[in-house]
Length: 86
Image (tube, rainbow, N blue to C red; front, side):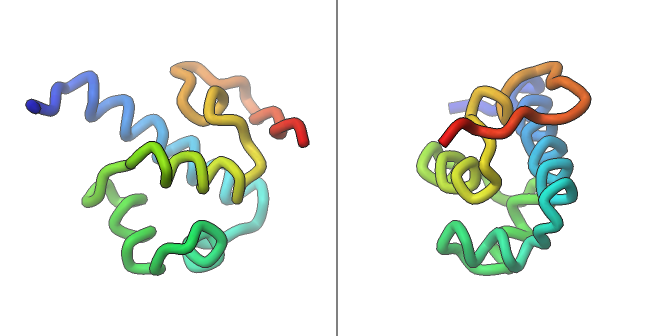
């Protein structure tokens, strides 16, 4: 499967949303890695764009950051994310 420019742009957007939500929550990449059951090195590579996202990882990240997958993946998120409903 070939990665398109659209795919790369979407991944960059998700990474930006992740960083924003991490900052809002006061969570660093080491803490996020611990919460999702990954290593800090893997989380660092993911945030730098050197590693891709699997659906399972996206869902674990959403739970860890208390954000819905919809909010994390949307193209034009509101200025601040809405918290996931319990």
